[in-house]
Amino acid sequence: MTIPATAELRKTALNSRHRQLGAKMVNFGGWEMPLEYLGILAEHEAVRTRAGLFDVSHMGEIEIRGVQALDLVQQVSCNNAAKLVVGQAHYSGLMTERGTFVDDLLVHRISDTHYLLCVNAANQDHDFEHIKANNKFDAKIENAGPRYSQLAIQGPKAKEILQRVTPVSLDSIRYYHFAFGQVGGVDCLIARTGYTGEDGFEIYFDPGHSEKLWDELMKAGEPAGLLPCGLGARNTLRLEAGMCLYGHEIDETTTPLEAGLGWICKLDKGPFLGSNVLNEQKRCGIDRRLVGFEMLDKRIGRDGYPVLIDGREAGRVTSGGPAPFLKKNVGMAYVPSTTGAAGTKLEISIRGQAAPAQIVVLPFYKRPH
Amino acid sequence: MYPKDYRYTKEHEWIKMDGAAGTIGITDYAQNELGDVVFVELPKIGTQLKAGQSLGTVESVKAVSEIFTPVSGEVTETNPALVDAPEKINSDPHGSAWLIKIRLSDPKEAASLMDAPAYEAYVTERAKEHKA
Image (cartoon, rainbow over all chains, first blue to last red; front, side, top):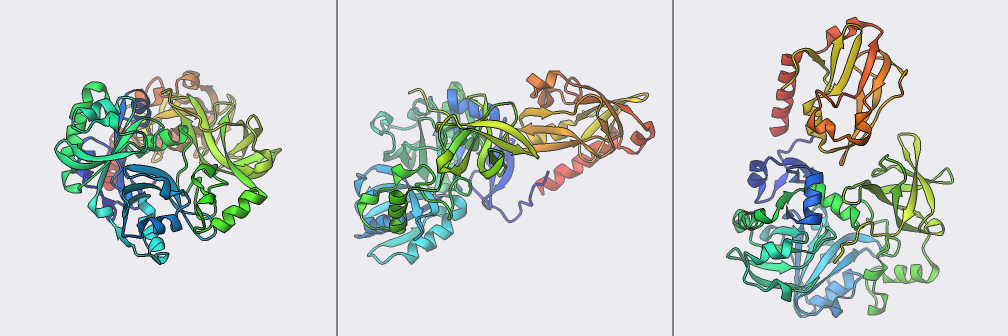
């Protein structure tokens, strides 16, 4: 087992909290982050049945301001930000001119002239440069990561717990909307978004208040079974919910249409970076597409393992592992689009042995309410 | 923590000797590094193994870890309890969650392995490196 040196890694404002809680720390995209506290399975279960609290301060924030802020957002991303009302957010893709992903992101419309983008930690600087290079508009771009900490509280009890420490009526914040208000006396942007497949909130605030906010939320949530959760559970939760992870399902070689993300690809909004390629793909069809699979015996198909169809390698597993709540082993992979139907049998090559699997409909897990 | 009558490897396996018979498992340090164990793959009974050869894998939610036999010999038993309850490796790695039993072809091989105090010193040193 190799654990890289952590000396030069970036740390969130909650680093010492994680250590006090006995977290196992890992390098994730250049950040020293908690992998797990009690254990991935316990944390996964907490989020599916109660609630979990995640430090996701490594996530990047980019702010775009100006009279043409919307035009810039529209030019670089594939979803239609013109449809957002103030106080609304959506999932989108930051596009190359080839219609592939520079990153995936959340776009928040703070005002008609102000957008907040939440991007992946490891991509933040690259995203910033990419947006800057495409800025032919009257808009200013700020690489705002250092000005924000971010906490995610996720799970069926997240709303009830968060409501104990905020005067903002959380019922009035609909899914993929946000509001400004205080949490534990700290000014926050409170968004009803997440990356777990559960209801929940992502809270953005000044890093100086990180420990206070973390402690207030843990205190408010402990009676309801709130657990601190690490990146390990964050990954099993998003996989079980069939969500893409940058560097795995999506990257600069994959398009939203191939990744099953046609719903964030609004080709009718007018031209944007890569839209000609995507229009062409939509017209002519795609050669490969992302599918979900479940293993048919107890073995585990993992990231990078070859996918075999009729005994021949047809692709690689992009993400694979246990889906703890479903008590199955699942994964995602690109396969030729002609073979992508649910029920199709395939095999995952595990250390040279073919293990049976079958294609299933995504997502693997959908929350009941 | 680490039973005095066991011998240990640098790859974090343990072996308990009883004449020419040995019981092999992974250490508490190893299970803690792996995290929640969800699957174990063990060799067929009767398999001949050479010291240092892979005897199977222990998989946690996050990772796959290959397990190496510290001694040569023939596999005489595999732990049936781990098929449906691999998580026992997290709760009782030095006891009921043993992996295999082996009939040693050369019992002298075990003499070169670490004893409990040496192993404890070894993992303490490793833990310090991780924190540095």
